[in-house]
Image (cartoon, rainbow, N blue to C red; front, side, top):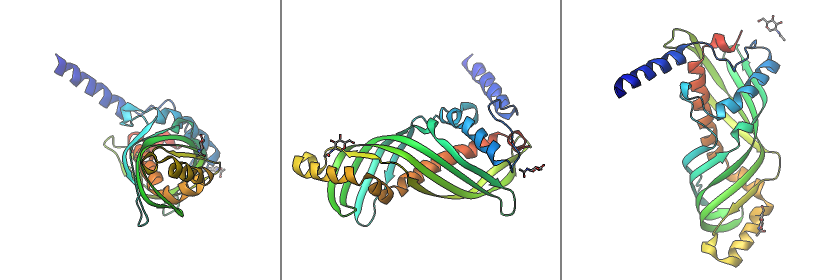
Length: 240
Ligand SMILES: *[C@@H]1O[C@H](CO)[C@@H](O)[C@H](O)[C@H]1NC(C)=O
Ligand SMILES: *[C@@H]1O[C@H](CO)[C@@H](O)[C@H](O)[C@H]1NC(C)=O
């Protein structure tokens, strides 16, 4: 009985995934960047909440098991990192350029709440630092610029789909962030307070310095879900 039910569900979902109607997408001309930006903006919250039919998991919050941001000067490992706020990200500029090579540019601005466990030892900017405990951050107006190339592939549905072939990114932070490490110097009040004061006054500088492994993990996750979206939705449903 259960098996039969699963089979029916599988069939129904398979059918859904291969059907071509995607009600929340506004089709645009490829050269109409205003339309593409607006259409992307409408998709962001739906996307962030997850689209199970497309294998897109909920990104609200995004969970990252482990990010190792260690450098030669600093051991920094963050585990069980949770990032909330993706559904409120703003599409600033979305472009697809169909000349060869076919290129895209996504510029998105997010305000995110981060929570996780950290382990740190070494030098943060010029500050000697050590600790292990909870880390929380509020990062306001972080702007990601993602550029890359895309190609076209034929899906299992026989339709043409976009396929992201490579990408890279930069980021900048437009407003002051909060960054708080609990239990610095194993709870030593004096050392901990002094270090946290420095961290408070240079949170953005620190985030720009240590941020790349975190933003790379973040964007890798986003791109892998965008790729699932492109591989599920035929190009003719996205672009006129
Ligand atoms: C965009 O391309 C279409 C044809 O593909 C053309 O009709 C239209 O004028 C172009 N629009 C702009 C803003 O360039
Ligand atoms: C650091 O800033 C937070 C607010 O983000 C504040 O609650 C905390 O008291 C500050 N810590 C120090 C040591 O200045």
